[in-house]
Image (cartoon, rainbow, N blue to C red):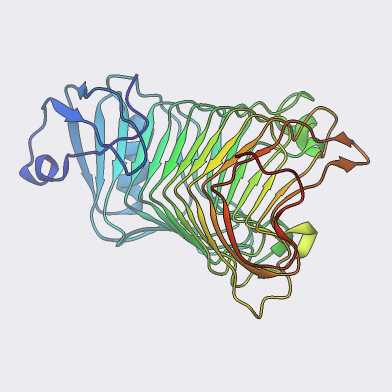
Length: 347
């Protein structure tokens, strides 16, 4: 299986025009541990310069293909449907000046990912109802992508999408059409949508990693919304800026944690002092019986500048009780009127 913390060191290869190479990939980000290097073999380079060329390349993609976007505007909506493999993922890569533009924040996904073992790196996603939607996929990596100007959420992992990584991305200006659904990153599905997206069962989009991203300003709802039904993710090293949050639909914190067994650590959050819509840095909620439990907060730095807590564990709701939350002493808070947290801090 390819490392989820990955440096796609292929730029020089792609520019050279080579059609088949062995690529060794590994990278260790600050505070993370990377598995041993993995060799990706038999890379076929496919350069594209127009929306039609990109759609054709995506439709025909095979394991090991590298689809390389020249700088420019790619108008339309795009779908990655084909699977790569652990040893030969499909790469879709370009600079931030290679821009997928769906043309309107009113409808559609700019990029939908329906194939597993795909790696999307470096490009810009803009002007769709939703930026990137990943459905029923595993081992997808979204790395260094810019997502901006969406009608609702920026990046969404849905329909049993597990073991994926979102890292080094920049997400701003979400919720332009519907601020209620303007999350930066959204993991899973709300219970009211389980019938539609997960056959009436909890949407177990589990073990996903959100690492070293910059989310905000002008993200209309939470920077990250972790839904009930999801388990075991890692939220680490991210930077949150709540300037422009609206408070719509309860979106009044950097992260709303409603899943189980998440680790939230080494994140840095900032809230402007004149932002009345913001209440707490992080919130833990029970939105469905049995969910919102056993989450861990470690070494997060919170400049809250608001009326609530840095970490507010809402212990009871109409759906049940939150249990097992651990807030370690390494968490810090500035400008949190009620303090670091409402539960006992663990040394």
